[in-house]
Image 1 (cartoon, rainbow, N blue to C red):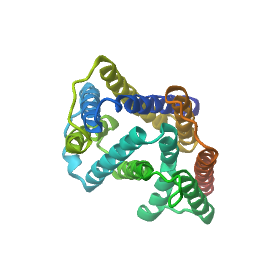
Image 2 (image 1 turned 60 degrees about the horizontal axis):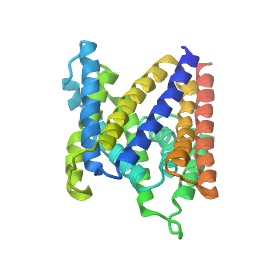
Image 3 (image 1 turned 120 degrees about the vertical axis):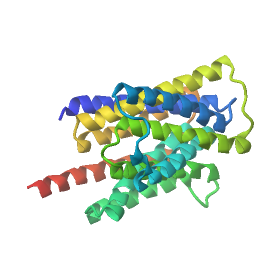
Length: 290
């Protein structure tokens, strides 16, 4: 396994994801969220269809009728819709910080649904990570923003998508899964249009923003695949947390965001808990191998 190549690919993927988020947030000032999802879905679907055909694979396989793919579709909708609403309605840095709890939810889900062994120390780390999420959301306090719950919905949706991907039929390639993941955003966007405002004609700036967001999104997805297939999962996965660093920088430079101390502490707790959980998982796998 080429851990160096995988780690570099993961960092580049997280940078591309952060740029995608920044561009979507910028475009949302003049374009309804529903229309953004439609255009983003169309662009991503066409890109992954081209990749699928280049690999001489069928675009629509009977395997998409499996229960795992159906669950993945539902989770993809929840994840994309929740996180898109989060980054358009709340600070980019806060939404991205909450998203970093996704690996913790995946570990908990693996224990609950796949029967994987998770020791008490990892369960404790997961609980501490959720405390970090609560510090950012602050439910019941004066600074509580109900719209921050969209980030929680997005995080849970992406975690469910990751777990469903693991259970997906092995004959489906990453490019095929990419087609299905982006395609479902098109009808989701149409459903959202009546609630988020009527569609508008894109001006040059918003058109470039959405096109660039799609390009960065597809690139990030591809680099993420390279990372997970090049290096050991336990080595490359911690580099997912660089997305928060990029989000903090872009939030400050582009949107003049200044996260308060509690938000920063909560972010550190989430990232620290996630890295500890991954390291403990690596040690547990090594012990079982012996």
